[in-house]
Amino acid sequence: MITTNNLCADIGYLSINHHGEQLCGDHVEIIEPEDGNSTIVVLADGLGSGVKASILSTLTSKILSTMLSSGLKLEYAVQTLVETLPVCSVRQVAYSTFTIIRIVHNRSAEIIQYDNPKAMLLRNGARVELPFKEFTIGDKTLIKAEVDIQEGDVFLAFSDGVEHAGMGLSYNFGWKSSDIAEFMAPLCLVSHSAKNLSTMLINETEKLYGGKPSDDATACVVRIRRREPVNLIIGPPSNRNDCTKMMSLFFAKEGKHIVCGGTTSAIASEYLKQPLFPSLTSSDPDIPPIAKMEGADLVTEGVITINRVLEYARDCLADNNSYEKWGFKKDGASLIARMLFEEATDINFFVGKAINPAHQNVELPINFTIKMQLVKELAECLKLMGKRIKVIYF
Image (cartoon, rainbow, N blue to C red; front, side):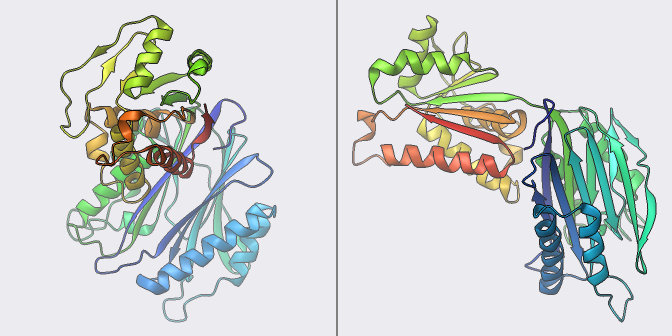
């Protein structure tokens, strides 16, 4: 997640396969070149569906991303790909189409497309027409647009499977771009993450297909937002004399503060000189209740709760089927998931390495190693979501 002006690009995407196919013919690559000045998203749509389309779209996006990450200019990379991209002799269309969105310094966006549906910009609840201009490379026509970006801007890119949704069912000629913009605009006014916005668009696409998509469909969302730090502390330090140091560093950090674990919350309560007010019930019977404490934004149980958050994170990176659970419930795991997945851009983990005697019972499925592994895996999942992660051990 590149940041140069306290803004950042939150990127999320989701696909559904052509009904009856195991592989998706669309592919998305996200690249952050070594210059650190830009974020590049490539969405490729292979001709047809199934294995062949999957290979074509993957090759297209991989070739583009490899050239761009090597420092080649965007125009040169596009020219090289387009000049070598074969055309189907039967349909007379390219074997793969693509959309490239490049965010530069989090100040401007450059979009280049070849035969994909036009990307759109939603700003302040309304569609803003992008200034596309045509240009040619050899015998192929592409379009390009450049625009200055603002906080709250949402760019939508999608394969033609989204526009084809509902054709002959809900709509005579498919889901027009104006219909898509009308559906997405009010959702973009709410602080949904890019992943969840793409999920909502694809879920609606699948509904319009009657649950049996006649084409692969992919939605990619780039949401321009302000950086939001969130801090999470779990476990007491290995040296009990470091409790004050650990807590002072944790609470001095900018942003929201999540305290996980019974012992950890007791130490935090003592440090802040604030009482803990535990809840007696949880909206999820499998997740321990949360507590309240002045000075902390959220206080939860430790390992069981974090394990559920990790399950949600894995699902979020895959099909995001669990969104309707963690997106609305009030248990500790769901609240943490919303803060980490949707609100946070920069996450600091403060991890105590003390061994909890209560976890050493051989009959319990919890031990020190498991706790460390949970935090490690959760941090890796959050990195894959585009978060900036820092883990500090005590």
